[in-house]
Image (spheres, rainbow, N blue to C red):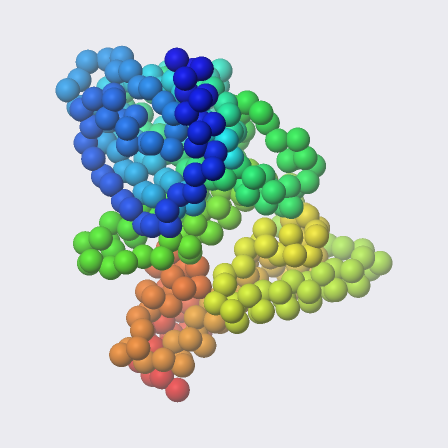
Length: 337
């Protein structure tokens, strides 16, 4: 079986996904249907326990990546192989009976990574929810190496597992993506997948390539001038990108300046007393405010502007905005200057 799968995986190497936002939510009654809803992976599924309903699946296609969330009503086994330039980051309900190849879900913080051209054998017990997101491996690994060169100099060639205290952030982001797509579909709105692609990738990278800084970093005086130069270059880069309606990420900054995430973290804590992520978020909030002030309710909406600058969790965005500017984004939009 796997020899045939390898042939199909190789045939897929040159294929590029369409840039669309396509959400499908389906109650599945057969293992074959569950496999068919994930055509980007060569896979066979087998139902292992009793039940007419096999799973409830939400599948969100964002073009460059896909998000899949499955709740199993009955146990299932998945056998397959990942295609070239394809990797997944996943997590699941903590369950000692769950198995991903030779790894188990032995902690609520467990995260799994499956690289390209890797055979997998997964057992998912009934009552378990699993979620994964897939990326171009070349893009993912290049960005991870920029953030943490030591940890990702030689990426794993087999399925692996690690623990992350930041997993809740990824769960929130992927849930927001699915929720936003559902709401847009109900309203008949079209979504640009670019913003969601960037947010999902950046969040997964922060988990996979997390630094060991504890947020209380200070630099010796001799290093302060280097930190100042690094942060000024980073600030110039961020402002240039935002002016071109591009939302830069920490990965973009690291790659542009040729510095690691840890070096950037050290520099920003000495420069402005906050992390690069927090500083970038403040820059984007200021860009939102400028855009809202330059337009009126007849020209745009708060949601459109928030999405434009990479804010997917609208409730958190509104709270952060009001905390800094002491008014809601809606109030800003209606008092156009």
